Each structure stands twice: as C-alpha cells, then as structure tokens.
Image (cartoon, helix red, strand yellow):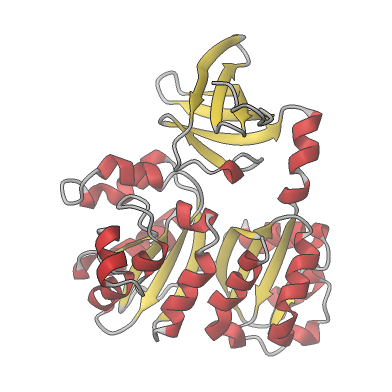
Length: 353
C-alpha cells in the first residue's frame, strides 16, 4: 500500500526473531516498517523469501514499538526486535532509545506515581520498573557507586525503593531536570553508562520480592497504557486513594505465560484470546495493591469493565480515564476475592523463580 500523496513513505528496517513452536526453532526476519502507512513486511532471512507481504498493522501496535528490545505482535506472531537492519534506521532511532535510570528512596513512596508521570510528561517512556528492598550495607554501597553519588545520600534508606528505567531522547538530562524538584530522595543516573550498569545490577538481576501476599489484590497496567505514557498517572491514582503499593515489577509476557495467567477467566470474559494477545504486546507492570477487602474495593477504583460505561458513569476511575476499549481497558484487576493472593504470587513469586 503506497503512502498518501505528498507523504514520504519512510521505511525502517529491523532484525526480528520469532520462536516457531512447531519445529521449536528461532527464526530470524528482516522486519520492514512503513511509518507513513503503518504497514509491516516480513522477509525470512535464511530462506530469502517473503514471509508476510506488506500489510496494515492494527492500532494496538504503536509506532514506538519499532525499536530494539521491544516485542511486537504481528498477526499473531510474537516478534522481538533484536537489532537495526541498516545504518539509516540506527541513526534515526538510536537517540530516542537513550536510557536512564531513576532510584526513588522509601521516603518518596507517596510520590512514586508523580515521579514517573513527570518523566512521561517530558517525553520519556518507562522501559523497566521494579520495587526493591533496601537495607544498608552492600546494596546501598553498590547503588551509590553505580549512580555516582555519595553513600551518605543513601545511608538512611531502609525500606522499599522504586527503580525505574526510562527511554527517550536525552533521557539522562531530561530526568535530571524534571525530577530535581523532588529533592535528594530521587537520584538520577549521571550518564547512560551508569544507567546501564545499574539496570544490570538491580533491574535485571534476581532480587527478593517486596510483595507481602496478604490483604492484597493484583493490578496489571496493560501494555497499551504503558506505551501511552499512563503508568505514572495510574500509580498516582492508586496511591492517592489510600492504597498501599507493596510491590511493582515490569514483565514481558509471551503468549504461553499470558494464557496461563488468564486461563481462569476463560469463559468468563468476552474475547478471551484478544485479552491474552494484548498482554503480549509490550511491557506489563504488575502491582500488589494492599487494603482491607482489597479485591472488591480496588475493582471499584478500576471502574466498570466496559470502557464506554466507565467513561459515562465513572469517568474518574482508572478505566474511565485511560481505557480505550474493552480489550485495551488500561488495567486488569483481580476479579474474585479468593484470587488476590494467587495472582500476586504468580507475578512476584512464580515468574521470579
């Protein structure tokens, strides 16, 4: 499909991998993205043949999905972009892929959502997020070295901290600028190299969960909301309504894992398969939310499952503010009171083993 008259049909090229379950092989493709028309084409690199002719992508696929490290769901196939295919694509997209990391000390907990939202409003996007238990000693010493700050800055930081990685143009400088108002409790990496080292040590490495698995419900911020820059606003809504956020972590789910988690809702929700697909289209952020009667109470905060109804009858709820449709309805929340602990355990225990 050619670009509309007068519109440049820019082609971005990527190397993408797809695990084919039948022969149990990883196949490598040249993925072409036509930005003007939101089309994609796949060429099997090894076989030197077209695997998917140029086709229109659904609105659930964002233009920002096309960058190294991101998962992209293309007509039921879960692709992972592993590299740029040409120097032109690398030159264009490398600047918007710059990374930084922000370390938020326990005393800033009430502002966790606002901190993330400040960076999102400045054009950065969450690429990873995790709460970690910090209690003196080696952990704080390593953190201070990697972030390039004095150990004294972290000396009284026992408790649950939040670590967030952001991507975006000039991300190191942008984060430092917009987060200066939060004071010494929010520490930004002073270089992209420091951010990378800190990510490897604290975000990518296994760590003890901060989840409590009691009086809790599970909230998942869905990929479309993360990509739309709604993460901070959603976390802020949860905290401002008096809930305790005891654990958070970002995950990339493949279809097998998403299907296993959502199996209990099969036959309960309409378009079950589409919900599973949505959970595989990018990062999800799992949150353990604590309160008395947490499951029932938090469902009210999320709002009606039907997004149109939420926007009409409960516009201040999470779905009323951030939902797009009944599949992209911003968040999943535990439905049955007996399942709150189980769903939190799935993300903060099972997937962390």
